[in-house]
Image 1 (cartoon, helix red, strand yellow):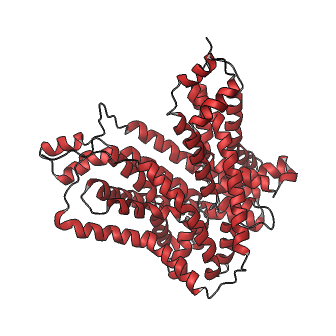
Image 2 (cartoon, one colour):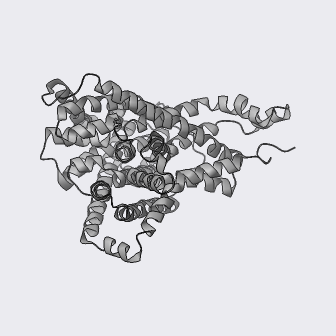
Image 3 (cartoon, rainbow, N blue to C red):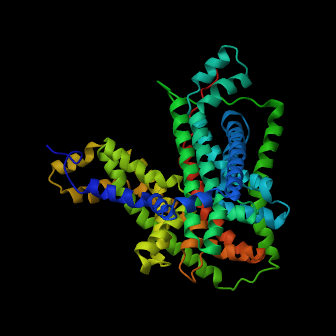
Length: 513
């Protein structure tokens, strides 16, 4: 009997088409850069400013990534491996800076402390805002890891520091590598925070080239260099993952008894309080300060309602399209775990390595060259959001399919149910929570997007992020505060859901006799 795994159908074609469309920005950037010609490309890329941009980007990425690794691992270790009181509250507080967009972090620091600018200002602000990307996966690894290896090390006479260095740290290496990759990719594509901190990187230079001179060729060549850096990071991460693979056999998920901090407990709590105060307290204080003070407020009474409705309209539309498009790709790789299916799925993940500004420029190039009537239309902004956040939707849908028994669709087919009815009456209801999670994640992430929105928004359209940007560039911090507050409020549920899904239930620690 032919099953849904072997029966022919349109699913491979649909999944391949979706993956091709999602990954197409890379092709469009390459086409645009190729039009410049060899001599022009050499002249543009040989400019001294390109070397400066490369140095700025690499230096910042290296230091911030190292800082987030140290901060994220230390915080996760204190929360998950010690007897620090209030661990649940610390976990939420340490993850919550993710609810504040990077450009709002920059606004908070610059509006309160104007001297926070340049390289070290960027290091401070980006480390503060991005370390949860390391903290969450490391904390999840420590929470669910089997304690036997650490207990064996202690039973062999290793001290706490030696066990931490030789056992615990290698155990979290995959989580550290994944977090470092996410931090690096965020840094490559960030524009708003660096523009506010007056620190020039590839992303800020690309935006300025396009906005000031509308020089698509130069902007595309710089974008191609940025994409090259992103792909290099992805390749390094894949190589590190192969060489540093952690194999655990026969694990039981038994929790580890927390280490007693003793007289160091107040010191540890104080250190975490400083981290939370700097990374979350400063943005919250800045928003409250400017909301209450509001001396520079020029906010029309109904403006924020209009911008919120516009933002949610675009975000909800993008989430619906991205979630629907993720279903055939996830379903194809789940039903048929072949090399072709894995290739299609990985191609759809390619945009994870593309900065927002690269996606925006590719969409602009496509519209100008092949679809002129669509240029600066709402559909192009939705398309940009779908490409940018498609991996989020695909991850959620794929994870929910992993919990569906493979034979359940074939049982329905054996009872005479048609293929399309199996999808509608069996498969989709079973993955409904995953579809909801995908929809929520894309909605909430798209509602705070800035860089692509600045390039793709229709003329005269303002979202929360762009209106916030208009006021902050004019130094009207009081007028910008309500828009930032709404964006943060919209992001809090997503961070709570992400924290809950990432950490799950704590493994049971062994009882001491």
